[in-house]
Image (cartoon, rainbow, N blue to C red; front, side, top):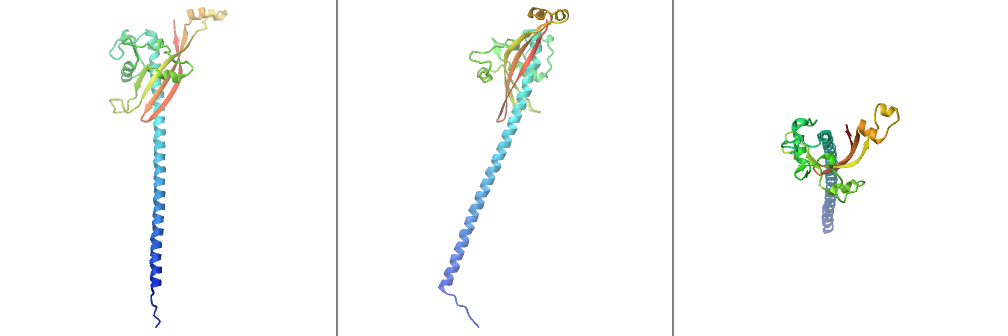
Length: 230
């Protein structure tokens, strides 16, 4: 029988092989840990991007929705030349003369959110440009106090703190007299005097809304035409 005898050299080789295996295992562990960390960072970044996009979309919807509130109030405010004398608006006109096409909770917010001038809510048709504002640069309007601040209430949220909010600025954008009607037009009289006497005119306003929802912020703007009837 042939017997293999171990020698000090063979023992040292086996020990070095075990050391190499441990070193290689540590290298693989470090590489896998780095891959896991990079993957987690990528996932967290994607989650933040998704949340930011969702917040921006929500803020855009809030801005668009609340921008329509002053539009719904314009006609009544212009026709009655003021606001109702109730606890919401604290105006001077009889409340029975108004029939706003928005809900009662939004009316209460609109009345409380209107900018006050001398303790009374500002009339939308009397708003003018403030000192330092440029009509052609809406970003300068936002340096002044908003003309209206509104919140969008979520279902079950009585404090209206989770649905988002919007600051709204309203600025004049010119006025146009109507061209006239009936016999005046048919005979070719289309002057400003004829238009004012027969058909009134139109006032134009720019409505700028800055919506906020979570970390999102969105700015929307639209022109509004208010018809003035004689």
